[in-house]
Each structure stands twice: as structure tokens, then as C-alpha cells.
Amino acid sequence: MFLRLIVQAALMATSISSFADGLPFNQDKTHLLGKVEVLKLSAAQQVEVSRTRVLKLSRSQRARLQNLAKECPPSLQVLTNRYDDCSCGMSSIAVWFRPGEVEIPVMFLPTKPMTKEEMADFGIDVPTPPEILIDEQLHIWVKGRMVSEQTLQKTLLKWKSAPPSSHRRTETGELAIVIDTPPVMAGAPEARLAGLVDRIRSFTMKQKIDLFVSGFRAEGQ
Image 1 (cartoon, helix red, strand yellow):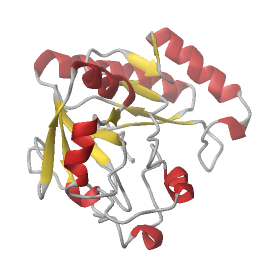
Image 2 (image 1 turned 180 degrees about the vertical axis):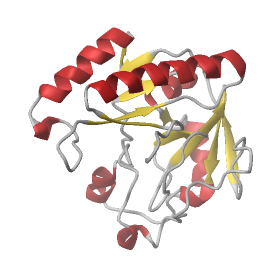
Image 3 (image 1 turned 90 degrees about the horizontal axis):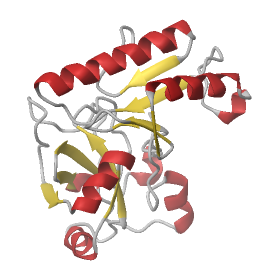
Image 4 (image 1 turned 135 degrees about the horizontal axis):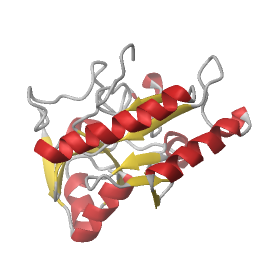
């Protein structure tokens, strides 16, 4: 799983709740279940979430969350309602369902302090943007830079030929890539996103690159 969200359960058990089966979505994945805080986003925060999947809390937003969990960090990692992986040991997250707001599952906010070293190790103090993501306008972002499909392909080929230690690999040595996607959209935008994912997957299959796209699992994943 990407974004450094998997934390050693033994260390975090006293401060963070976890659900081995994933995030507690409602049946339609339009909201979270359980205790949730909804935060409205400023225009700048909306751009930040869309392009980095990181939310830097305003002073008032952080104070509001600290009333519920006093160790709430200044920034949160943002997932979307396409997230379908384990939530074991997850901490300090926001979930993006629709434009202009996020839902904060209170159970995942830390309530007891950790050392600076622990926070740095787990990426809790400074959440890490995905290497590759797609925003709701279907723009592709690689390490914070917007690129075309063709540039993405060239980048993946460059990473494929780089030393194995420079990028994540499968057990058999294939380049392993994760792409994060925006929240579920309706109608034509969702169809265009599916088409974009299909084109990227077709390219990676031909190049023997292992690809995982959030919300678009390939057969066998």
C-alpha cells in the first residue's frame, strides 16, 4: 500500500484504531460511518487536495480536530472513496468524496503523543503525496508536475531502466507503480477516467510494468 500509511500495529495500538477490512464506508461509498468531522475546504485547499492528496489544516480546522484528538497533526493524508485496501495501523487521514469538503474519521486521529522520530518514520507529521495521481479534471501529475500521457509513458520507461533500488519492484523484479485516482464521478467524466486508466494499463502490460490503480483493480489484484 502506498503513502506510508501502514504503521506497525504493536506500536500504534494504544493511540490509533484500525480496521483490517478497510475504511468504514456506507454501502454506496458516499460517506464514512462512525464518528466523522466534515471540513469545508478553501479554494487553495481544494487545489492542494486534488494535486497532492495532502491537506494542510488551517489553524481553526486543526484546533477543531484537536478538541477531538489532541495529537492531531498539522497535515492529513487524503484518500478517496475509491480506496479499497486495508486500513491496518492507518493514522491521520481525510477522505475525499466530493468537491469542496473532506470527511475526517475521528477514530484514525492520534490521541496520544509519539516521538518526532516515530512521526517521521510513519510519515504522520509530513504526509507524502503519491508519485503519480490523476485529478478530477483527468490531468496526470507525476511528483507534483502535470504531464501528458506520452510524458507519463516516457517517465515509466525511464524508471523501468533505472537501478532497481531507485523505485519499488515486485518480487520478480518488475517495476511496481501505484496511481491514485479522484473520487467516483458520474456519467461522462467517469467513463473518460476509465478510458484513461485502460490506456495506461495497456501500456504497462506491454512493458511488463506492475500497475495498481486505486479503484480500478485488474483481474488477480
